[in-house]
Structures are given as C-alpha cells and as structure tokens.
Length: 319
Length: 248
Image (tube, rainbow over all chains, first blue to last red; front, top):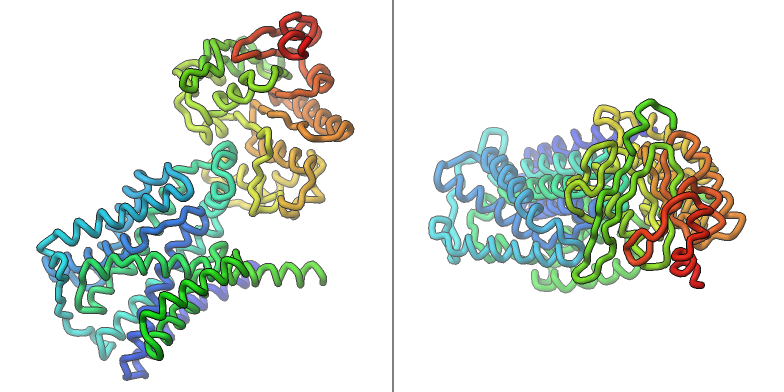
C-alpha cells in the first residue's frame, strides 16, 4: 500500500508542472497567472516553513527575512551580472542555506517563544541593512527591466508561474522525504521532548540546524523570482511581516504534521486572499486571515490534516 | 564478572563536584561501578541523586575526567553521543514522545543509535523494537498511542525505549514511583532479568524493599556527599544512613 501511494505521489509530482505548462500554452489572459503565481509562492513558503516550524516545532517568525533575502539576492545578481533567472534562484537557495545555518547557530539554542522573538530580530536587522544599501536602491526601492521571455512561453509571468510550480514540486519532495525518513522521526522526537530525544541518541542541535538550512534555502528560492514578477523591489514590501504571518497561518490552518497540510492551507488561504483582493479590498485580507487563524486554533488545533486524520481514525476504529 | 578485562570499571566517577551558584549539589563524589553490577542509589529528597544521573548522562556539564566510561573521559560529549556509547536512562517523571505510538518511540532509539548504514532498514528496526516490547510485556500495546497508556505501562515504555538504544549501562531513575505494590514487583523483576543479560544497572529508588532486593551494592547520598557505600545490609545498618534517610 505504501508503494502504491508512493507511485501516485510521483505521478502527481510529474503531472502538476506538466499541467501548469499546458495552461501557459493554452490560456492567453495573464490575470490568472498573476494570481496563481502568488498562491504557488505561498505553497513553497509554507511547506518550507513547516520543515522547521511543523516537524521540529520551532516557530519561525523570520519567513519575511528569508523571502526578502531571496528577492534581493536575485536583484543583486541581475543588476551586477545580468544573471539569468535560474542562476538567481540557485544563488538565492545557496544564500538561504547559509543564512539558515547562521540564524540556526545563533538562535536554535533558544527554545520556544525565545526562538521566535530572535527570528523577528533577525528580520529587522537584515531589512535595516538592505534599506541602507544604496546599490540595491535603498529605502526607495529599485526598478528592474525584465529580459525578453524565453522560447515556449508567451509572457514572462507565465514563465515565472511554471518556474514557481517546479519549486512547489521541489519543496514538497524535500518535505516529504524529511517527513518519512529518520530525519523526520528525529525532529518529531525533539519537538515532543528535547531532553528525552537527546538521551535517546538524537543529535538535536544538528537536526534543528539541518531543518533550518533546508527551510531557509527553500524560502529564499521561493523569493528569488518575485523581483522579476513585480519588476520592482523595495525593503518595506520584500521584508514585510505579512509574509511571516500569512505563511504561519497557512501552515497552522492546514496542519503541520504532514506535508500536505501547508499545501492545503496555502491554497485555501491564498485563494481566499486573491478573491477578497479582487472583490472587496486587499486590506480585508489581513482581517480574514486573523479570523480564520483564531477559528482554527480553537476548533481544529491540528489543522485540516488533523481533522482529516481524526475522522479516519474514528472510521477505522469502528470498522 | 563475565569477561577477562573486569579490572577496568565500566563507569568511574572521580572527585565529581557540581555547583549551582552557591549551592553545592554534589560534593567530591567518587565511585567505581563494575561491568554487570546491580547498583542501588539512595538518599533523601534533594540529596543529589538525579543531579548525579544528569552528570553521567550529559544533561549537566562537569569538569574533565570526572566521568569516565569504559576508560574514556566522556565529560565533553553531548548526551546523544553518550547514549550511542552505551549510557541509557529513564526519567523520574516519564518523558515519552507524545505524538508517537509506543513502537515509534522505540524506533527513534533504533534509528539514532545504530550505525548510519542501518538507518534505512526500517523493518529491521521494527523487529528489534518489537522484541524489546515482548520482553517488557508491552507487545500488545505496540501500536497504541502513548497518551493512552497507564502509569505502569508508561514506566515500562521508558525502560523499553532506553533498552532500544542497546545500552551497556542503564540508569533507572525511580522507575517505580507512583506504582502499586504488585506493579513494583513487575518492574523490579524486569530490571533483575535485564541485569542478567549483561546490562549494568544503576537503580535510584525510594522503595527500600525494592532497592534491598535488587542491589549488590548500595550508595547513600546526603546533601551531595557519599555517607555510606557497600553491601545493602551494611548500608542499612549504618547509623548515618538511618539518621539521614530513615529519619531516626
């Protein structure tokens, strides 16, 4: 049965980008792609967030720091070398991994709320540095001229959507691997009880660092194409705390015990936000986000995945 | 006891002193524990028993060469490395991995204490974990959630998880606290059986009958100092032990 699930997973992983590619070829209206890009980006971010925040239970408020660093790594490479999109993303992932390692070393010895506060501090430090970096436009931001779009795609945004879809698959594959491997069991153990895990042979600090590195790399990679998407970058929006809050809400609402949780959460909240932004106003987003988070924390503390599993267990128990 | 190299103690505590600020929790404690020994550790509340365990298992750092295991200084090693070298412990208040089933708790131990190349064969780990559960009489609860276990089952699971790390030295920190009389005997029988399988055991216990029945040697701590060590009957007859521990 495990095998069958695994085959289905890989077929899905191959089919999804193929499907996205097909839509870029068939649909010429650009709006759905503008909206879809944002949702895909949030899927990558919340799946990446869950690796540290869900499996290890270390609530990271620094998503916007990693996202913003991804954006500005891309901007820096594009401005100075004219680097192509894929190089920008790969470099952002590398920078993200290094940043994750550094942040992890500095903060992962702290537990619980102290870790979360430290990650907010990191965000502010990095944002302030970028704000004062003239070459990258400083506080005023920087305009970016997109290069011409590449062969099979008709518009740059459609190409970005396809690239982001590939990142979604990458993030899910990585998260799924971690969840099902000894790394995932170690993270789960240390989330339950760090001292007991350590005394059972789990190298807790090393595993937390690993989770932080992988999570950071994926978040930065997800941020990199955003510069080209908006054709503009400024510190206040690239490092906006909204990213941290939205991603956290998506992961928690979806449920963090399974990789599918943050995917469901990101789709649910992402679509809601896009609909609200079009029909009412983008400010209402934040209100709805807050309300949904409260409702879920009270009604389904383990998220949608948790509800689903509870249902399964009940059905299984009676049968 | 069994091998020829019995000269070397399995565990040597050498002049171990542990202070917390101005408070001296352990004061110049020295003791050798032989391989295969059943060792009882007693003392009134706050006498430093659990502190000593924390120093051995690595939760607390100590001065170099104060804790030697198999002839090697382990004071610089973090707890998980000490576990891999063969020191396992249970906790005074059980600390299970609450989001997992019983067998998953044991498999964490198997995953992280076996050699790296074995990490992939989850089936083998499951088999060996199951064998330990059978030995502990918990086989029926293998797939049960930890949150649904009774107190005695929880205690046994803690011991089982410690065993799953394949220890040379097992430290049982009040494994019988809060259990009924017949449950005490169950856990005690298990510990004695384990000691017969080449595992050295340090047992911390308040229940005198259990310590007396279990131990080949007993050490009594009071206010961080060793006040008596030796045969169970000797230690019990010691007037300082009676004064400090039994309150006469």
